[in-house]
Length: 327
Length: 283
Image (tube, rainbow over all chains, first blue to last red; front, side, top):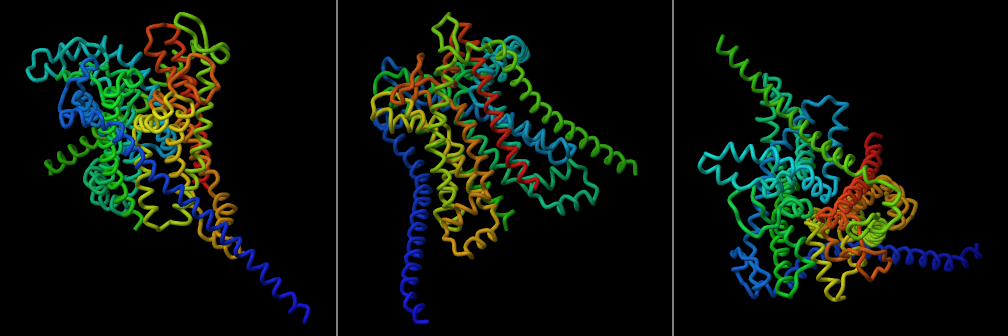
């Protein structure tokens, strides 16, 4: 008994030491993981600050006219972002117009029509489209799609719309194969998997009771989709579309191959143009002079701000859908 | 009665048309994938030979291979993964284990999702301002850092998701035998979420091995063999970019072959990654 009592303080102190050690190592691990999480925030902040610092020279030289000027002349060092902004917006908008109906169609096919054993393979095949690196789309667009459009599709469209006022300006000029429309088509393929998989996911959140009751009063599959599923998932679909738009706006390599890199604004969709990211990719390593480089970084800043806003809205919408299903 | 019947007919017809269009949409999606993979195989396979893997990138008009580009891609991908993965896993751990309901986690999740889909060329510009400009020259290490920044959001996202799937009862069991929190995380949570975390890393490798834009003005390119991390280094995607846009037929052929190599690697990685988690879900 007395021996145990004598040993007790030693046991206690060794236990206390172990507990202290545990507490210390745990605190270190906790702090390390927390620092890593904060680093993610620092990264985004760092991107914003460095882009702003890098573009300061261009922004202070040109001021607001940087956004409104179309000239892009390395020789006289006059730079304006209007043509790349125009190209970025137009190609992304057309890509969305092509990809959204297709993506929603595929999602309806996968959730309503597709035989069950085929769902996984077909869904995975569409998602593989998202995994293909963008440079592959570029090389395919340049060597396969563009020549096909140039020799077959574009001459046909040009002659078709030749006499129609309004539309003949939209589809005018020599058929280069490359240009705004080709870029938009490539972008559409690239963002299709995002729209499809997000639409499919939000379609799955529709309670089956809702669909069953619509079927119960005799609705057709299309009517159920149109009147029940799509209204119920509207925010989620919008989120998916915005996410895809964010991707399309920032896509670089695929567009660089097929846009044609011409700093001008043309009404024709067949005309070569440029986008913000294509301009940076093409000219950055060749840019001589600080003002030229700074102007390219300023283009990057504009792209960053636009995509940040679009992606933030997209994430917000998708979070709202998540919150609803989580509750 | 007849109007009801005709209304029924027209609704049925409309349904048929719309459903047909959905099938067509799926067909277009699959056809596009087939067209791209078909063209890659057709044009790329023609140039596959041993010399692609044993010789350096050639000057215009000469025969050669892609050895230095493949080597550069592997080196920068490995460094990118080694730098990016621990940061991503730790951040994901914080979000799922220590700060699951904290405000910081919500903010980090939001910002991380934005980083996940931010244009990669922006990351390239960031690293240019951060490293290339102060150092005064392009370098492989700058390229690797740019790739690491692309790795982080992918790994953060999958790590958090996978740790969130680990049942709390497992953690409670670990805590009940007196293990401190970080031992529970290490030996219980990580072990249970391992295949999911590995999936995230594989997806990250798949993503960065095809990235071109962030390498254009960080690692630049190099026509010669270089193992110096402080000097410009070739990479497969940048070489493809340069060769595909060149007027030389040999270069274009090499670009197609390189494109085939990258695509097969990336698709194999992502299919393997999906099969890892797919099996989990089936259980």
